[in-house]
Figure 1 (cartoon, rainbow, N blue to C red):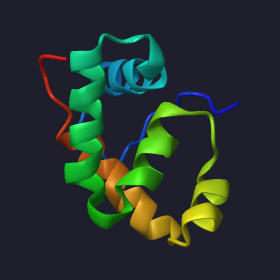
Figure 2 (cartoon, rainbow, N blue to C red; figure 1 turned 180 degrees about the vertical axis):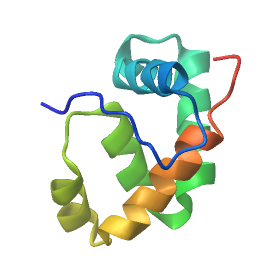
Figure 3 (cartoon, rainbow, N blue to C red; figure 1 turned 60 degrees about the vertical axis):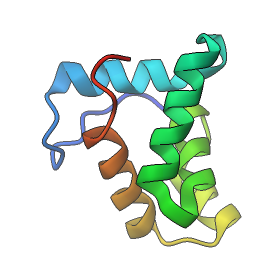
Figure 4 (cartoon, one colour; figure 1 turned 90 degrees about the horizontal axis):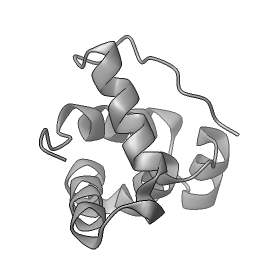
Amino acid sequence: MEKFRVKRRLKVPYHTQGYIYFVSRNYKKLPKEKRERIEANCRRSGGEHWQALFEFVTKDTGAVEICRKYFISAATLERAVQRYYEEFPGDL
């Protein structure tokens, strides 16, 4: 099980990162509108790798497993995660 860890390279404050992390991990419990907005953010932030990003931010699957499953590099996943956090809807 992954634990929340602050990502220091992000231009997002610690508490905001925690909020985004826990909202994303509770994806299945959210109302449909909020789930759709998270998915849309994954599509924008992840581009062609949006499904890998979506699985990474909404499930307990680790980065190594995601990279192997979707045939992407760790750097690609990290960039997508960075965009996801920095572009996360502020009113969600």
